[in-house]
Length: 158
Image 1 (spheres, rainbow, N blue to C red):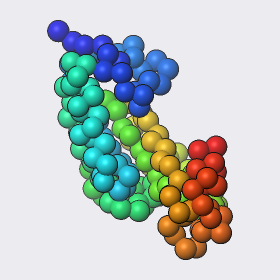
Image 2 (tube, rainbow, N blue to C red):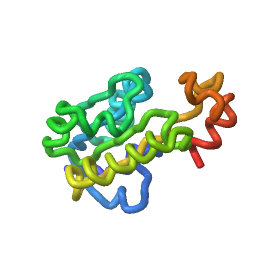
Image 3 (cartoon, rainbow, N blue to C red):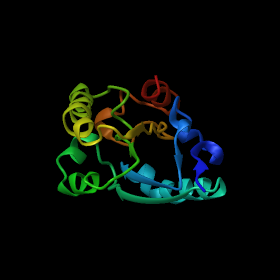
């Protein structure tokens, strides 16, 4: 018997229309960096899904500090995305979404359009947004734009 996907209730999976699917096993690809790896989000989500009666499998490419544009150039990401995933969770470097470096942001947008979109056509894609750094941006070159947590949080989640 299959379980309704949303019976596990994780907010990550609450996007409109997502809960209309019924699965016995959910296959999830994680493309991101240390925010995914260090907090072991694949294991955390697997536990939430299991609590709702849905088994899961996952694969990940999550090196620290990685941006989506760097992932697009990584052969291990291309290989991972060749597998039949139901869902792909994409997470950019935490400093990129706020636009502090317009080149980094443009490169991420290009990666989403030119690399990820064709490979993930027909699959659920979730963009995982991260939070601001506690003491402002950890990257010296962007610290003036993100001087503290509140500023970075506001700009990267707008």
